[in-house]
Amino acid sequence: MRYTVLIADDSKLQRVIVKENLKDKYNILEAEDGLEAIKIVEENIKTINLVLLDIVMPGMDGFEVLRRRQESGVFQKIPVIVLTMSDRKEDQELAEQLGADGFLLKPVDAKQARLQISRVLRED
Image (cartoon, rainbow, N blue to C red; front, side, top):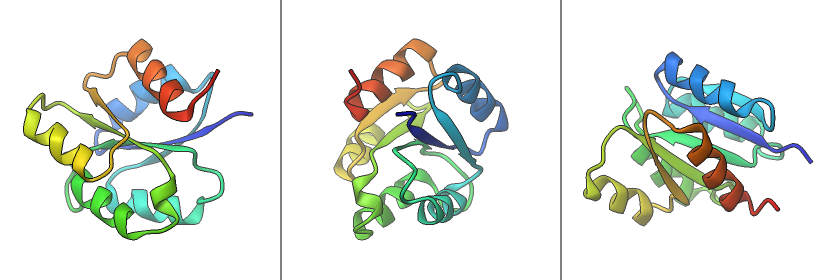
């Protein structure tokens, strides 16, 4: 089975880098901001297996996406790994309190991303 990963990041460069490192193993969808991410999840609820979510985005940030995810019975079941350039402990703690399943620092290391995704999806 080939899993589908949604990359939600306002940086096109970050989306391209992550996509290039994952596309051989995963189907990739992309969102430029939190609102688009929620819309894509709602439209593809049966096919998205994981969301890589940037915390700092214009409009709706990643924290707000996580809050809305908590309120959504369906979206709650999709794991989310947070992406951020911030190594502030408070950001990581808030993301975890809001239900994030993992945490990756940017620039995203391809090997680390694959390990986190594999762990969260419980791939063998």
